[in-house]
Image (cartoon, rainbow, N blue to C red; front, side, top):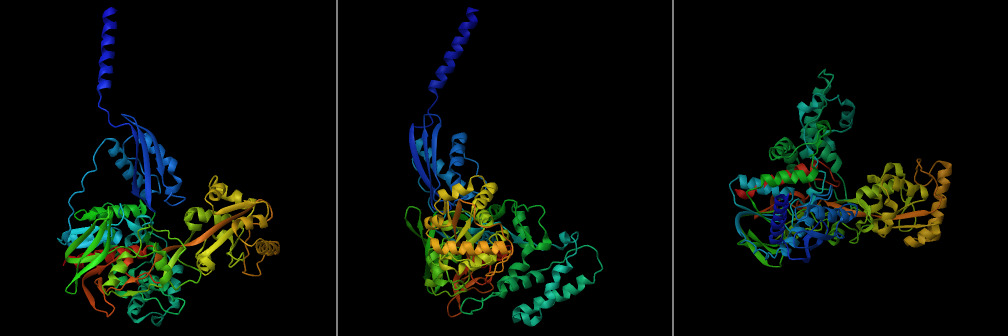
Length: 620
């Protein structure tokens, strides 16, 4: 018994000595670091003892409400659970999650006493320099590498993806074999009979005529199954949807060469992405043209990153100025995260793929000529880095632009303080909507949701601002859809609640008497079952049961459709219509491939195709 007790005491002493001798992992204290997120700097603060994280604080206030900004506690709890390891991404918040991980890693490195590693010597000369690591830029880099070129990619953010990473990732996939088992879609094809070849510009007429022949063959094939689809159909649809005019009567300039080439290559693009690891969501139907990656836009970007593995991607590096020598673009000047200016040399060509200018709201307000009510105070719902850098740089060396007047918007919470999903819930729950003058301006039936017609009408209202209004029924509907949503939106400063219409109006900054008049008139229409002003016939009740709830919504810039003028080979053209040697452009940096409206699925296919083309051409 004594021998056993002695042995146990020895073992306990041994374990105690081992534990005390264990090398401390951290120097106890509190450490703070930041990293770039979707809307700005994400800050992570950790407190550590010798061996573990004991407390964590995350500041994601710069991120989008409804997405990253709403997950502070999730990020903090995941840091404590991971205790030094990389945290799992929060669903729907990939960019914010990546920023938290980067800042966390830097803070823990500091706690371990690791000196900040000297940045590796930068590669500053290559055959091809690509500006931007979104879908177009990565596609360009991948194809340039495949062509045997050395490639540098400069990305202003700390992450790849640009606007594509936050998108659904929809792309065109026309696959006759997959359509063969679908039900026939004759009824959906009748609309094409209303057109004639003269309905289209000359360059588009052969595609309509080819479509007519395909439809004739399909209608007479005698088969009971099989949905019709074709490249010609997609091309015709693309023109019909995108054709339009600005407020001055200027017609949008759809670039036939770019559109035709991109849409014809849909299978090549799909196969290329799948070969590089992208998986397609089951249930996607080719008969509706579109497919979607299982991981949405993020998975598409990951596939393009894999394809571009041979390129040197330098993050946190913002291109600022093109370098020209003897009339040719030979490189670019850029600024690193620490402010260091770096000049890069491109022996063969520079590809601009920096995206549009959605987040440069002053630039959007300067150029756009589609809507009357928008100004530079309307926010953007895209990454803050989409500033139009590439367009401005190219203009400085004589590049031409086109279609800068054409844009589209999304309805969001005022100053981006409610996500698209939250805004949809708010609008659906409301009983009516008014502009800043407390006046209704459209059939605002909640059952329709924030439909395009409502969104576009709002763009012509003062400041692109509207107020969704209701009573207890609205509050209940919001909270039924998302627990606590009504209170959460109030806490963000864009919603107000009071006992009466007049009191709520005063809190919201609306004219109390005018809003009371508008609501009383609306209530009369509800009683009558018909709207004498806008023809509305569906109602969700009068505004009468207090409290009265008012939420401020706003048009946010979503996409810009204008950009640099290019030829079919993506050479950037000068204002005189000549090629600027050594300069190529792709993706949302170029203009006239969407038209006057966002065409989901069509656009990403063309974005990737222009990137692939630019990379191949620049590498030659």
